[in-house]
Length: 313
Image (cartoon, rainbow, N blue to C red):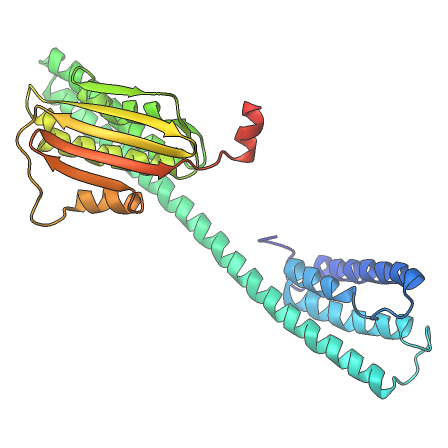
């Protein structure tokens, strides 16, 4: 429907003819039951469909052809080219006026769909290019560090694993749209670069769909980055625990840091705080407790797509 037929092509006009033929056949069937029904009733959908698929030229052709066919077939005396009465002329004029309005609305709808298609294609190109550039930069960093740390195998083994985890997180953000992902998998992916010796995860399996996995990946990445820079992961004794539970269609996630340096609320909200709060549409609450940051997330679980539901069934 977004692309349709090429405007002004033989296929577009042929499709308009098929629409009028279908409308005429339907109107003939109605005539068997209600001979006095509105003559042009079934032709409005024909004009609409012809315009949506073949654009303005096909829609205009459908209007003209519908007017002639309905006039000859359904306006008395039927199957004769007599001059229409005043009432019949008004009916024809009203049909043409209404059909032109329908055609214009359908054409605007087609324009919107075309722009959406172009924007979607552009977005896909940009995302693919961004993902490609990120991979190239990570590969460059990987090569530089491998060269510089060639004599420090222990450090390199630890660092290379973290770089691979960061690369996997970037791939997830690019490719996860629309796919179901377990909440624990998102957390493990984002926290793997820091190791799990001081991190506790607890909660039942929760499968997430739509945009929620990507949004949570961004939120967890921001929280983990802040913990590594300023919070519980910035010192050796710091820890944090993440727990979650699902009640009906509501999901509660608690991120609790402890044993880290003393924290206090900043004088102004940071970019990270704004990102977390806006990403979850106000369903995030950040507390700056003496032992570390506490972030409580509350969100609604999106319904699974029909394809995923059928697989589960």
